Amino acid sequence: MAVPDDAASDRSDFVREQIQQDLAEGRVDRVQTRYPPEPNGHLHIGHAKAINTDFEIARDFGGTCMLRFDDTNPDTEDVSFVEGIIADIEWLGYEPTETLFASDYFDQLYEWAELLIRDGKAYVDEQDTETIRMQRGGYGNPGIESPYRDRSADENLDLFRRMRAGEFDDGAMVLRAKIDMQHENMQLRDPIMYRIRRGHHHRTGDRWVIYPTYDWAHGQSDAIEGTTHSLCSLEFDSHRPLYDWYLEQLPLPHERPHQYEFARLELTHTMTSKRKLAQLVASGVVEGWDDPRMPTLKGLRRRGYPASAIREFCSFIGIAKTNSRHQIELLESFVRTELNATAQRRMAVLRPLRLTITNWPTDDDGNPVVEHFEVANNPENEADGTRQVAFSGELFIEQDDFMADPPPKYFRLTPGREVRLRGAYLVTCTGYETDDEGEVTRVLATYDPDTRGGSAPDGRKVKSTMHWVSAAHAVPATVALYERLFTAEVPGEATGDPMDDLDHDSREVLTECRVEAALADTPAGEVVQFERIGYFAHDDRTPMLFHRTVGLRDEWANIQKRQG
Image 1 (cartoon, one colour):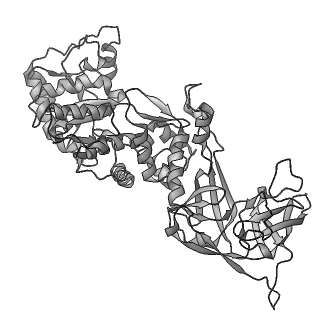
Image 2 (cartoon, one colour):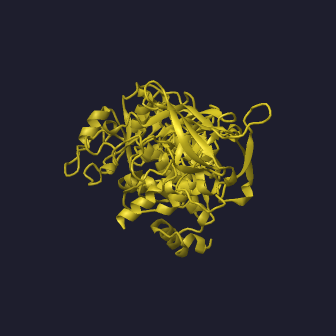
Image 3 (cartoon, rainbow, N blue to C red):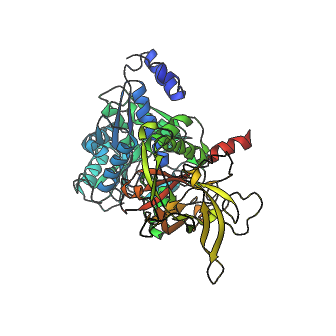
């Protein structure tokens, strides 16, 4: 197989360089990767980096990438997680060559375990898990060999078969590899290979009462499938000697795979611990795994993050050998760039304030005249065409776009000031009305009929352009605004518990919004730009509920300027 073309070389990194070397030196003549999630939860943004790495590297080298579920723990795994992971990977834009399961290999793994026992390289240990853990010692501390370590192969084989037959209680004994209890790498101090566990498995049912550990199943599954390059995150670096040791003991059906580790994806203001995310859901801090504030792919999708932006972000940050934390503003910049090119523009007023044009004409029956303006759907893409937006003498504007007593450098609507209504007319504020508490309830203005389209024939300039909706034609909508779920850049850095940095006011729901009628036709899940406000995703379950995806301001660009 040929080394990849320049397109792959342009994104060179140490993993791709290693694969190029393997191909050039003839160690492999093909490239096969795999993405191996455990189906015990939902994928998050950190997983997206691993998915991107596995699938893009396979694509760059003309190879294949398998999806393999490491389903070795029946107590925490479920078919719903399997289905959710498959859907998330498909949404990201990847299609595995084949979808497989570690449970497909339970019989082969068992046979190989018996082989190790016969070769004197595995034994049954009747000590409890805590005792085994204590006897392993620690870094710089010696390990203590199990009193069952020198059992005969025949006795170990008999006990192991009886374990499989279900003769013993859960936790009564385990099968351990017999390696080196004094090894400086703790992973090689007689690791556990099998444990008794009577949980109902989502695929094999109650056929098995013993289950392989991740380390015993992982490398062997790679070998059975023909994986050439097993790509893992850095926390598995210390596991690689064990990965290799197991493979060296077995008659493999293919050439031995090799494991390479790369840095995980960590973002500021973000937590990706499955256990902590589950705590957020269970405690009701968020509404579920697809809450738009969650870093899960389901949450990001519901919030309106384009899959293409996530892919581009993961490719941009590349593959590193050391862990680092990326600014979440960088990811948002990729999202914003994609949506700027693709999102339809619409006008929406989130906190409505009524604006009455007092000199607006009426028809013969005394009803306000209705005009229509042709407005571009997306100035970035002429092919998106235009739409007609209704305009009349009663409008809604944002409350923030009017101040009765403005501070310096406030250029929006205020008594005596002229502003431009987006694509319509120039209007001048002539007064306002208040309620008994002094709150402004209505703004009064006059319009200049010679400024249709927003330009004055005499060339006079205004300093503010405001969006609006026609009161008679607007439709109601609910809008959810989101802030960072965690206030600290590194949640839990100060106290050790990320939950201490939770922003319990990270969501604000506005229920009195008024938006232009075209938004009622927005497909579920589609993202639009609310002009002057930001990008918003139409909820995929609740009509006329919009989630703020990102604002219009490029915060990443501002960070770069400050750092420059």
